Each structure stands twice: as C-alpha cells, then as structure tokens.
Picture (cartoon, rainbow, N blue to C red):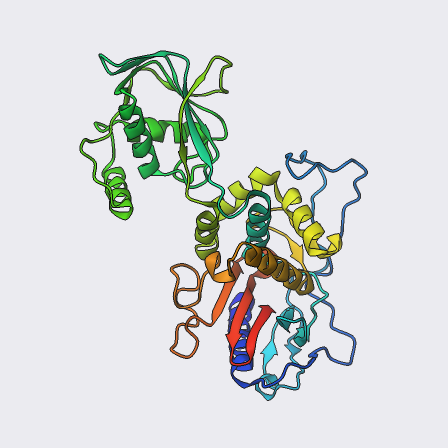
Amino acid sequence: MNSFTKNKAAWLSVAAFVLWIGATVSAFGQVSSKPTNPPPQPRLQPIVIQPDNKSQPTTNTRPQTSANPLVTKTGSSSPIAVVPRKTSFPVLADVDIPGYSGILVESIDGNVVLDSYSNYAFNPASNVKIATAYAVLKTFGPDYRFPTSVWTDGQIDPSTGTLNGNLYVSGRDPMFSLEHAVAVAGELNRLGIRQVYGDLIVTDNFAMNYSTQAQSSGNALAATMNSAKRSAAANRAWQNYLNSAKKNALTIPSVETSGGVYVQSLPTNAKLLFSHESAPMREIVKVTLCYSNNFLSERLGDMLGGPYAVARIVQMNGQIAPEEFIIQTASGLGTNRVTPRAMIKLLRTLRNELARNKMTFADIMPVAGVDKGTLERRFDTDFARGSVVGKTGTLGQTDSGVSSLSGEIQTKNGKLLFVI
C-alpha cells in the first residue's frame, strides 16, 4: 500500500472519530492530543517566506509575477515514521496515522475538543477554495451577479433584422455556458437582430464552457448563437434552462454573424445593447465548493487580484498571521501552506460573514450525503447523513499525496468546527 493510500485510510479513521465525538461527548472541555515529547520531524517543514521588499498590490489589482515562488518546499518529501495518535479518547488509542498530519476540533464557542499539531503548516489542497469563497462573498456579497454585456459599433435595421456593424461581448461570468449563449441570441432577436453583418468580438476576460482561452470561447459563442450550427448539447442545455425557469420559447433563438471571431478590447464608440446576468454569487460559490471546481475557483480568485489578494483578505479579516496562511493558487492546486489553526479561524470568519447575510455553511458548501458532488457518497449512512457540511481536499502527487476535510458537524450537544 503506497503512502497516499495509507493517508486516505488514516483520514477516514480520523473523520469517523469526528463523528464519534458528536455521538459521545457530553461536555466540551479542552483535550489535547499533543504528545509530551517533542513532535517528530515533519515530512514538510514549516513554510519559508521569500523576502520581497517591493510594495504589494492592493486586493483589486493583479500582482506582478515574481521570479521567487510564494511558497518554498523545504525538508524531505518522503513520509516520516508512523506517528501514533496519543489522546484521552479510547477510540483513537490504537490508531496510527502515517506521515505528517494535523487536526483541530473546536466547539462553536471556541473550546478546544482535539488539537494535534494545529500550529504546523500543511498543504490544505482544495480547502483553499474555502478561502476563495470567503473572499468573493466578503468583497462582492452573496447576491452579486456577473454581467455579460453585449455592445455594437453599428446600426440595427429592424425591417431586415440585421445589424450592420460588429458585435462585442464582454464579461467575467465564470459559469457562462451553452444555455446562456442561446439566451443572448434570444435577447438579440428581441431587439430585432437575426443577422450580423460584421465580426463577433469578445474581450480577453470572456470565458465560456469553462475554457481558459478567450478565442475558443468566442468561437463557441458564435456557433451556439446560430441555430444552424448549434450542437445537440446546446439544444438540450437550452431546453433544460427553459424548463428550470418554467418558460416557453415561441421561436428558436438564432443569430448568424457574417464575419470572423476575434479577441479585442472594446472600442470607445461601442454602444451597450443589453447585459445578461449570471446566477447570484452564492449559487456560483455553492457549485464551486460542491464539485471542487478548480476553474471556477481560479476565475473567482482572479476577480480579486489572484491568490495574494485572496490571502490578504483572509489574513486581515480573520486576524490570521501571514506566515500561517500562504497560498500560490486560488483553487488549492500546487504547493500551499496553511495551519489547521488558521483554517479554523477562517471557518469562524466565514461563518460570521454568512450569518450576517442570514446564511449558513449549507448555503455554500456541500452537505454530506445530501448534495451532489464530492461529499455525495461520504457520511451517507442514516446516522451521519446531513450532519457534516464541509470541503474536501485531495492531491495525488503533490507533497507525496494530500487528503483534507474541513467544515462543521452537528452533534447531539451542539455544532463543532473541525479541520483534518
């Protein structure tokens, strides 16, 4: 059995223990699983911060690329000897967790239930997405909708249903997909446009169908707006969109462009025709966290200025020391370093922000055994279903394999926050 498989098995043991706490603990008191002897040498030593005397960008600007990495991996990447879990809870007395691990479980009012190496920095994997989710909700609000704006530099001839000029599309909606492209065509039809005698031009921040390339997104937009070129998948997506919105389309939306598809900035003479709005931010975040979608998380992070901006928002609002929360991606891919102690602070800060907007973790994070996605088939027994709301994290190769879970669990004595 390789080290990653062992780590996964150990992770499941600890996760089961968190559920066990919920069923048996009758009073919250501080319990520490830290051994009295000095802790073993970690597989990955604590983070190293690269010195940088340059001024840092604000949260609404993209940081300049530096030759120095944000995070430097130090120490050996090979697993250390098996670390026995020393705890006053009998269920964990004989559990061995290989490699380097950290656990922190606290009650909502801040009492420590279990603490194991919570001041060590680990790779949180996709738990970084919790930080990105908090940052966008704090910055934009849960009801914010991304506009996809449609412009022209030409004139509409209603008598012929033509637009004589170029059609421009701009926007940063990270979930702009096939059905939205058909909806844009329908709105153009409503304005009397079925034929564009000109080019279709998208700005470089436009993305469609989770593509990272504006050119391919523009090509997909042109094909999907034209019913003669529209794919079967697009037709199904459009019908599903109508069904979910309980709408009926009297005609099939279609717009044909005679010119090419290009990526350019908006000209100064472009006139706004209309804007198509995305789903609210809370729904975008829910999809991002339920399916652990890396593209969505990176796009959301980019809107804030990248991972550095995400980290600064989290550090400042969560009162987290910078050395305890260093990330180089907004999705959790790659080498990032966060302490369990910092992650618990982030969960508390996020919980307070959600409460301020009359929301809970379940509004933006997957509910185990209930929501589709990464927790759909975890904690799905009658005993556990719906009791855990959290975010998974998995990396198969980075740092010799990473597995994590953070969130909130409902117990018979109240709720607990946990980081594994």
